[in-house]
Image 1 (cartoon, rainbow over the protein chains, first blue to last red):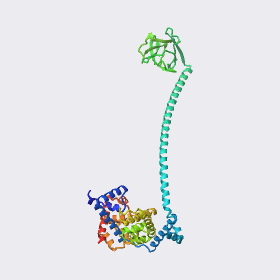
Image 2 (spheres, chains in turn purple, orange):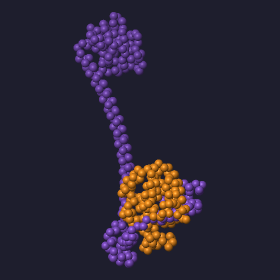
Image 3 (tube, rainbow over the protein chains, first blue to last red):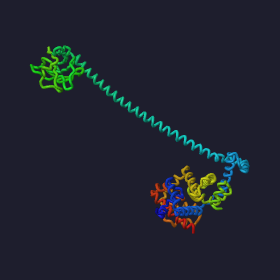
Image 4 (cartoon, rainbow over the protein chains, first blue to last red):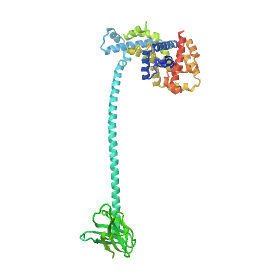
Length: 286
Length: 176
């Protein structure tokens, strides 16, 4: 360590004037113990401070000394009183200066007050630590509840939307079913031994809108779909594909001049031309 | 009385020792406090408190850490600074001081009041203005190093080294 430089930095003066933060104070104290030159310099600094203070002294008023010595006297008697007196002289002093003792009666208590303050601050620290932990736990709990509630809400909203869509669909279906412009055309099973198969088309011959309603159709494999055909002028026209498990009324392509409706099983996505051998249901118009 | 004897006597609660201590250092500590507080009455209160504290806490004084006077001086300075802060006298006083751009005039005024020794005043005037300023603020007015550094925008290290130069100069001369 460069001792000259260390001294020149003024750190020892700051140490002497109690200006250093605790960590630096410890550091300087350690170096002082290690380097006698530093200790010697600190002594010189302290002597300098003392001389400077003596040089720049201001004489206090005379009564101050009496006041100080008087209050110390009171204090002695005060503390002896508290400690149930081990000095006879002080006891008598205490009686003699009983009147004055009242003035500084608080002083011996400062230790007690101080202890109480320390005790209080420890209690406050413990309580606030407990509260901090407690609040943190509660905060975490409420954070979790909040997230759960948010999730629930999202789920509810999804459900609501689903229900609303279902309701809209039903309403739409209801409008179709109650609209007298729509005619209902039944398609019956054309498969031997499977009479239960059925489906119907709701067709508005004014607006040409068409809806399909599945009665009973067999379950299809994943790669298959049903396809609705309209036979117009003797030719099959695709009205679109649908899955076997579709519910409600299915909107199909608009058509006009239909003679026959028919449903075939086709590869998923539908075919250009119907696979007649796979026809399931069919029904004539009129 | 040597310092060791004095401390031992104070620890034994010898009132004569306190009387001696007051006679020897009372005026020095009074001057130190008065320069910071700038009010005689409050300074008297503070000095009374300081001596009571010395009396009560002499057990806490550790002679290995430094001289008795240094310990008392720091007790005094801290008490004076606390008092000034608690009364918020400082705030207005500080502002006033900052307003006077020529701090050397200010320095002369306050040292006029507090520095009895003509020799010391002359010594201080020998210092360069930067050193005078730091000495004035820290030693005579009770600014902490960091306060001075922040309020006047002087690096902390510079505050320390300037104060050292100033105190060293005074030390050398005072001893002569």
